Amino acid sequence: MEKVGVFYSFNTQKTKKIAEKIIEAFGLENVEAVNAENITEEQFVKYNRLVLGVPTWFDGELPNYWDEFVPALEELDLTGKTIAIFGLGDQVGYPENFGDAVGLMANLLEGRNARIVGETSTEGYHFESSKALKNGKFQGLILDQENQARLTSDRVKEWVAQIKTSF
Image (cartoon, rainbow, N blue to C red):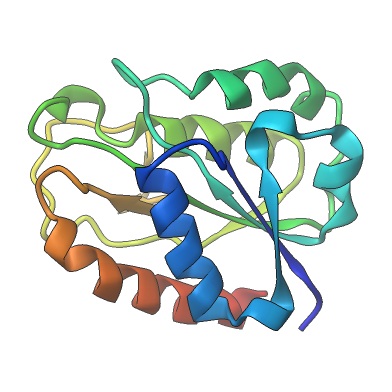
């Protein structure tokens, strides 16, 4: 398998911890971690297989570092890129926009011809709405560290095994 770029903020606590679990599940020799806070277009297009850590901030927004990179993404042709997205959300505190950032990013990338993989079931989640939903499934892995942290390790392992087959 060619190298997988795992993009996430090195300065976060929860997203960083999840990214480290994902990297471990992939196997360290197949993965390169990239700090999403300092991302360049050259770094992004270097990989054909990417995993993006995109937590939902506030009322369904992208984190600042991803939001600032959106104009660059809108100019890229991502044909041939396979991308999996994971994010964190709080289904109790923000049930009306649970995991929205995953959906915002997935839609943007699909619009640039990227292939999005790693959809997951909504089973076991309790929320009102989410922009991450497409055809009844999440467009990536959404984790709720506030309310379901005990489920994270198994969800990560299952998700990585799933996306490995698409990479």
